[in-house]
Amino acid sequence: MNDGFRRLLVLLAVFCFAFFVVFVVRKIQGGDSLMDILPSSASENGFESHQHTLRNKPSMNLKDVEVLAAINAESAALVRAVVPSVVSIDTTGIRRERIRDLYGRTWVQPRAVQGQGSGVIVTEEGHVLTNHHVIQGTPRIRLTMHDGSIHSARVIGTDPAVDIAVLKIDSKGPFIPLKFGESSKIEVGNTVFAIGSPFGLGTSVTEGKISAKKRPFSDSQVDLLQTSAAINPGNSGGPLINILGEIVGINSRIYSTNRDSPSFQGIGFAIPSNAAFKTMKDILDRGRPVRGFLGMAMEDLDPMTRKEFGYNERAGARVTAIVPNSPAMQAGLKKDDIVIRYQGKKIPSMRRLIFLIQQSKVGADVAIDIWRAGVKHNLTATIGEMEDFNNETLETEEDKVQKRLNTQAVLRAIGIVVSNSTKLDSSTRRYGVVITRVNPDSNLRGKLLMGDIIHAINGVRVTTAEDFLTRLAASASVQNTELIIQRGKSTLHITISPVREE
Image (tube, rainbow, N blue to C red; front, side):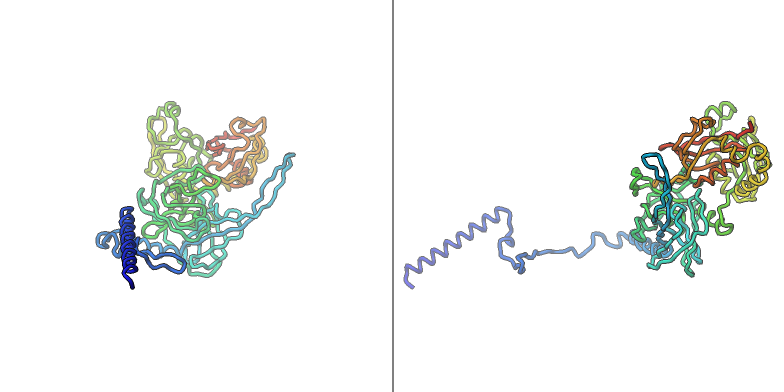
């Protein structure tokens, strides 16, 4: 190799080295690392693998979170123990809807409907507790167990006023039931778990707190528990359990600002286990719910009433009428008495007193403290049964009613026409009958309007027009009759005076 060619190679090498040095310096000044500059291995598709270093220790030492670890383990154990007793409910039925065309013609059109909810097994024989609104009007019921097995079930009995239904699994047991807890002992702030099948997705568990107790609703005979545990459509009928895995409530409804598509917003409600258990026992023992009865019409106290009677205390409910031959009359209660206490409990409202009476055991003696004309009295009444008294009234009063006004005459004198309501408020689960006409000569014209939905009569929930008219005719012929109606977003209490012979 001659000297000239050697010098050329040296100069070329020096130039390449200088170029590389300048290139590296500029890259480093631009923020790149040396590893970014050096060539790396690449896959066949051109992707270059990245160096990565993972952390091999948790953020906290287990000894520092022993309580949380124990809570996690206990929560998982609790859920494993209770979910085998929770079932998913699918229903199929026919709903008859009234259709009206542009010319005013109406006809009834049947429509197949499907529903979905949840339930909880409460006996080894396979009795299942759920909501009345889950299975209402749906003769075919299918239960899906936690293990995936499918069973048919039949309805043993329901109580629309409490929104409870009792089913019986057709398959042979034994089944795994859950125990009832004492809902009266639960406290605001206690941890609870809601279990059910929201949106038909299968068994789901949500955790929350008891947010409030004794939440009243006009269409419910019982005050409900409020919970922050997530409850969505499909959770209805599932259990609300405490940390011992006991049923403290039956999930019933949610609060939602979107009535067309309701969903969880942090406020759910459950029927207290004590009320659900009593209803279930009545249905299993007698085939129907049993409610205590005294036989008196009442109203809440307002400032004008307090001033008129010279009564200055806040607690109490005024007696406005006494049903003839009723337990209230036999106990010595009179019109214009103010009931202050019932079994030693203060009476904050008429509704609370009705609840206490209806939840009392039939045949039991109860202590009633009243205020009458400035003097307090202590009375004792024996609880009767509402259904028995209604039947007795219909039988023994029939001749008297026929002499004064027969059933049709009573209804004509009242002057309203109702029909079954097909509307359902999905956020509150309200059923009832709808007023389709108020006669021009009706005494209730102006008080009741077409389109009003009647939810209850004398505190008893109604779901069919026939049931409502029967109760209305029997009640209005002998006593003041209270209707609970929904008008738009408002709930009103309307009292009908007894219908007198003209």
